[in-house]
Length: 361
Image (cartoon, rainbow, N blue to C red):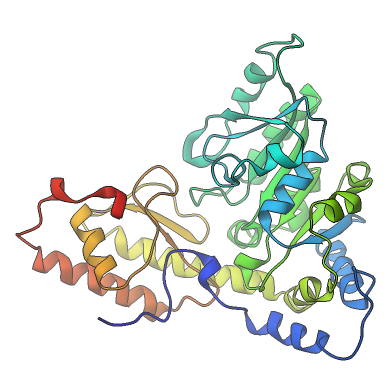
């Protein structure tokens, strides 16, 4: 069995991209003040302000779970609630962290096609009840790009903003794959953040090519009050902060973050275009960023797994999630497609679809 150098399971599988690694290596020289009082953290924060063309407050935390949970906690009190799409990461993959770090804010779910919130669904949830027994809605969280590989356009976000403004809600953005969304839309970062009403963005670095560390960017600077204390209390204040922030310097200073995301998106488009031609495979959602969701015969999923291809089948709404990363190559895609076509030609007669245990896929 061939050992695969790269997989389609997650963009988290990829290593550190060269630009991030170079900055990390440069930061690993001599003694530097700790806890964020260092030139690398200051430079990274300034580069983010330049990127968004706004004077915003910036904090670096270890991961996306902390970024989302702590920033959502900053939008309200423990008796408030957060509205998000039913497939959102903050609902399905944070192990209750938003509720935990907010001391009890409840997550309320919204529907919408292709992983995107339907703005018309916000008001009914907010106005469902107004009594003291109901957790008062305080914020809406959007995921950009979504858990189903789609992207909110500028008009999409402005429609949601119109509702949040009307109802007095804050707008949070889980941007674990924010770079892929910007690359997909070809817009300025400001156009899908503060210009579209976003109060706070969790900007993902690890899926974009850094080793560790996401940025929390407050466009509404009032919400950032004492956020440093939240970070400290939750174990997110890195003593050697430069190792979280320095890679951002390498990614941001010459646009590597967008180039790397654009490449990952291009590989996903190639994968999509190849898969859509295979009759036995159904594309489940529009592929607008760096993911492709496809429904395959269970025996084919099993055959690909046995050939050492790794990908997830439990994320989204069934089917297989195929994720491309900054280092995915055209050869990776073509090898994967070639194996699919080979297995389909061989079409094992001894595997009954009904006998495949989906839990093991």
